[in-house]
Image 1 (cartoon, rainbow, N blue to C red):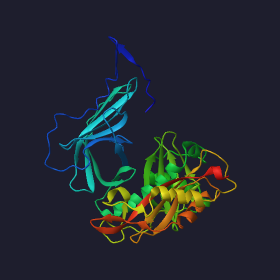
Image 2: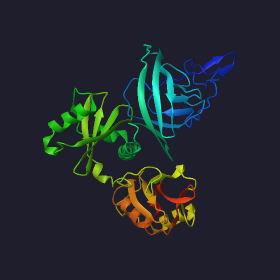
Image 3: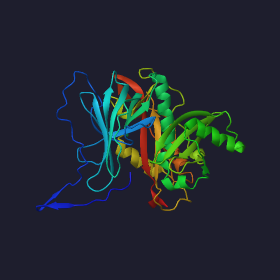
Image 4: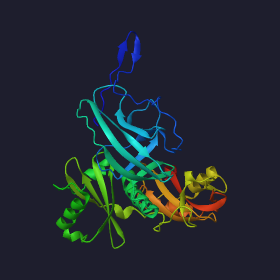
Length: 374
């Protein structure tokens, strides 16, 4: 979507919203359904539900006045997704269809109609089954991940999606632009990966396994490969038909737990927001940050810059100990490893609880490096 040109319309002394395309209001004529729809309501969505074969959608809560890409799930099992802006000229797309949610883990979409207006045209009635999606929620939002209906496979895809997120969230778009891009005429994920591997024999990625792929930052798709227990990230720019290997993956220290468990199993790792009782540091969050700041030794090579935050994850075990401490992003110069050292000095935590039992849970932490100690 190109940026909207915002225009304020003054009519009879009253400023009004002149975007006649912004029709995202709740469907007041929707009848109540006896089925409990846990995802019903209005959401931000990263990509519209169209004919593209998207493997994943990301949802976050939205309100009636917000703009951008939206998804509305009505209680009568119909949906509408589309793009809206406060005002101006743009290409406005709306899609309509039905959805079913037979359990708390999966949702299926059936795309019926696509409408385009503004600076684009071409209504259509695809009547396309978009397939089944696994519902995964954590403290950041909700992911809908293409599913074959098997929970264990779904959770593997959650892991693979998180691996790609660790690269996507850590780096700015400019980092991708400076990769060693190669032209390609291929468009399918398997064909793109195969062509790249064959044209770069020195990388020795033959027989690498394609684990997952997902769209990032509007014009890129990241493909996760694995060979000999090592992950590799192939980036495809579908606007310019180019691919390149992302070569900074060695700075990523891994995923929380390489094993995959199903909900209800003793070793399953819960997202913090999905538990009845969330994990907490025994002496309180404020004291935790005071302890980290006091004991953190700032690397001497680190100068004052915008890159002064460290993003970390760890598992709070059932006994309150911390395990699988991983650095998602840092400011280099060993800043992440120093945070790991200090985190290990913390005392016991109060573990998360679910249905009256202590459970393992994944905790996300953002730490600001005390640059005033330089």
